Length: 196
Image (cartoon, rainbow, N blue to C red):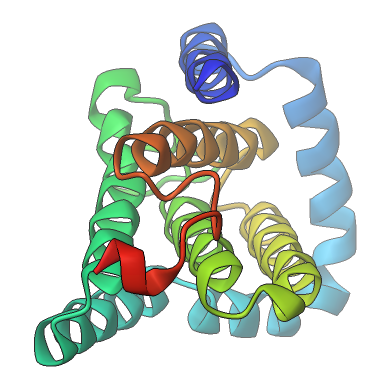
């Protein structure tokens, strides 16, 4: 819980720090992304299309439906975890940070990165319960998805780098707190039969 609070607070502090003016690292990385963009726009667009809020919508609907049909308490708690983690995106209406390019939605935290990190975090937690032997692979896949999504949003100039960092900090921080409250952590300590 302490780590969760620390990460969530770090996301808030970062958001308050960068909301009015991008720091040097944002400007530097944006400049680098603009130089790289011609060769990577197609790939970044494809990543942003696949790893998107649409993925989170499908994952949440699938988890909720499966939990309902199978009357599976673990999957129901997973659906709640995913929904709460993903809802951290609404913090953008508080920060109201402007994007690197003109766009109708606020920048901080990144919606794509929030959605993908929420799915990745929930997937890792559920993997720890359902298939612990694949946990390491799940963590690697989750991290790769988050990094690719963040990079694609910066390359496409849809977000500042700190928008993506804030999204990850917020989702993981809130995810740890919610997982603890839902008794999903430490994962796999109690058998699924005892949980149902």
